[in-house]
Length: 308
Image (cartoon, rainbow, N blue to C red):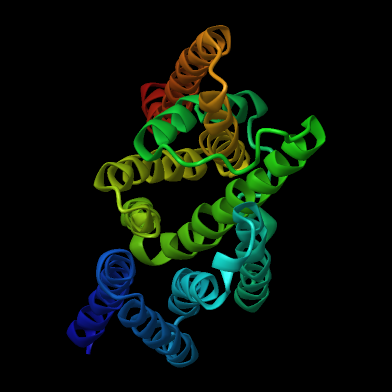
């Protein structure tokens, strides 16, 4: 019986890696082959994950199935809406609002607390250091994608501010709550140290729609770094800010700046990105050093007690 239980226990994480492979396949089909084929896989995945959650024997498995359900569900929402008929900027809140509702419902059904989701301040200086990576990420994303401006040349400062707020909330806040908050925290009890790589691959897969392999690689690296930052600080505040800043720059500010180039503005932006990257590195070093000190503290205490 013990051997059978061990095999079943090992098979449970394997099932979620299979789900991840199918989500990636669906995203590839949607981006490069047939959106309808990808849509069918997403529908199948939603049904399979609902059934998996309903039949799961352990609460950890049920929670992860419900959390992972958000990924194909978001894609179904995005594909099911007539976004092509709307202004480009309106597409972000149009997808984010039902995503947020679904995320809240999953949290309530799974009993995920604010602390487990990372909705805490953490260490403010470390969170600011993580957020400082936003400008560098925004520059890299813009350089890879070169998106069209979201607003016209006659846009006012009020319109730009509203657009920036919509982007920051729709992408930075909602996406990080879903990926690093719900899915990563749900995966941790079942996948242990593989939770961060799992969510990083999922995060990269969900960006395959850009049809840029380089962008997918960047998102994989970002997913790993954001996942480690959230895991080690116990807060998603820093990654929410970094993600929001990066998208506001890549999708709104830099396309507008490229249309009316200013050497002074680009110089200041490059300096800001460089200093921000240094701040993010410093925060990362502080986080990992603190974690190493914390993990070694019990052993040091035992040695002191034995010496005494």
